[in-house]
Image (cartoon, rainbow, N blue to C red; front, side, top):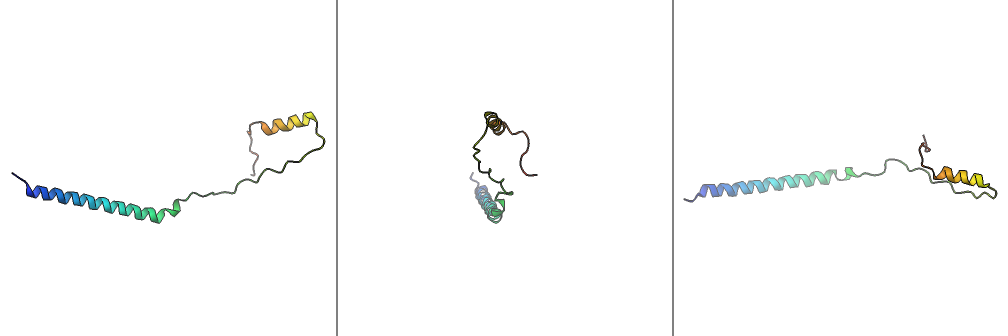
Length: 83
């Protein structure tokens, strides 16, 4: 025996499923289009000022140069930015 009612029921179920999926996708696209611009993650703060230009000192001892190099090349463990 064939089941014509069941076959048409399967077709109707498949169509309903397809329409539901299309409606959900359309709703998703509308929400994405409306809220897409609000998801922009731009910078929220101003960057720090650039380093000062180096000043050439005509007279510097070796000890002063070593201290300067040691201070500028050590890991930064304390905050030196603006408060």
